[in-house]
Image 1 (cartoon, rainbow, N blue to C red):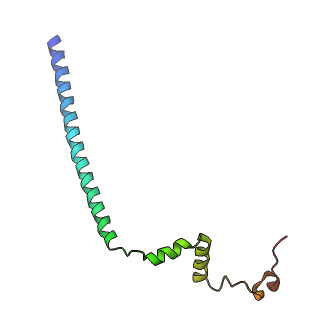
Image 2 (cartoon, rainbow, N blue to C red):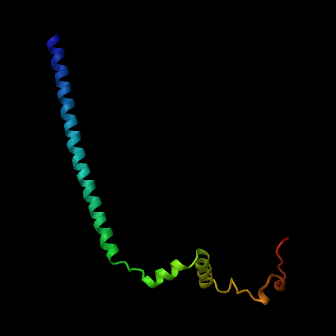
Length: 102
């Protein structure tokens, strides 16, 4: 009886070892496929970034010297010139009848 049980356990262990080896080889191929896809994506990114226009140094320097508030104000005035009139007497809160709460 000991010989039969020993053969069953030996067969199961052999099957387990072969299964683990198969799973390992499968995982290696899966990793290799993923690495190939990552390399292809990196090539596409590099290819697309080579055609991207570079920011001229003068433009970068002008924007770097301005504060964020100045940039936002310029953007606001560029996009909505009528919504944000300049600070003149005719547009003051007192002239329009809109006084800030006190």
